[in-house]
Length: 130
Image (cartoon, rainbow, N blue to C red; front, top):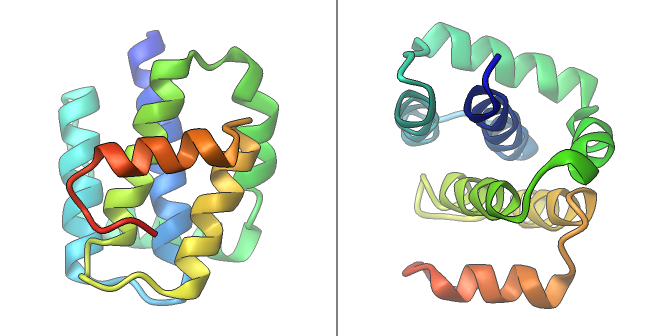
């Protein structure tokens, strides 16, 4: 598997973790996850595949441990892409729940992205800051 596809898998996992954080999955979140995955891999993922992945990660809740274990092997650009994708997922339904905001911070910590760097990444985006 090429590095780009591995990076896309990490981005997808992180987005799914945030989508599952509030216990609800809506069409905006699914659509964003599909769009980002397609753009990063050239492959599509259908609605049922996204819903299944969200249910699986909602139950397992091990994406943080997986990201933490992989963090040392991920370059900075990939970490930033993951944070950006997670942040977009957080705002896909035009509201960020406390659970989703907490998950963003947990993902950043697992990726070894200090809070000031997280804040800088978020401030570079055109969405309201957390």
